[in-house]
Image (cartoon, rainbow, N blue to C red; front, side, top):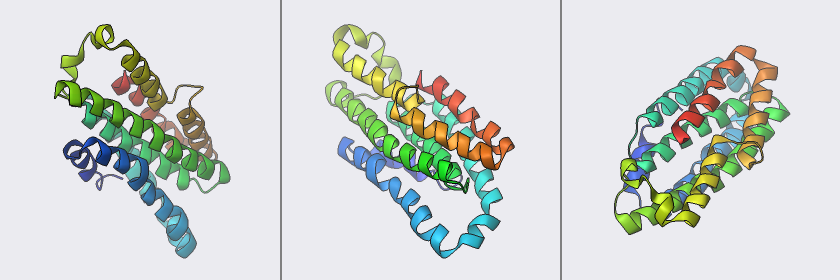
Length: 201
């Protein structure tokens, strides 16, 4: 969450491909596990009391990380900032305090692990071949690596949460769960869906 997310893009950029995949696939999910397993069980009243602050920080995280991802030129940084935005959506789903939001948060966490891990793996393949993650060098890549680009497109559309992908189910349930609790917060967090499409494409 904002402002505790600054370490993540730096860690992803410096890490090797396997480190980025493990970081996105497993380590980011430990925060979700901590919220569900410890915060809500040990401090339920505090979770209710501080939920407006969590909403504010999470919405700031979604919008700020998405706007920052739009202006990145390093492909790993784009996926890292999108991970920040998606995990803030998960936090909003957890703090919706209903079963739909909880289920959406768990599904989105699971889906994000596969999608972000796959994207980091594909970027690692590009880096090992061309030794650059600068996005402008890869114009016309589909002519030399068509199968690779097909996989990259599938993972990018899954990152956007296109209907038919696992991310869509998680994000939709999160937004429904937030809507049942707070319509204003839901409308602000839906900005993340629009911005995700813009930086991914």
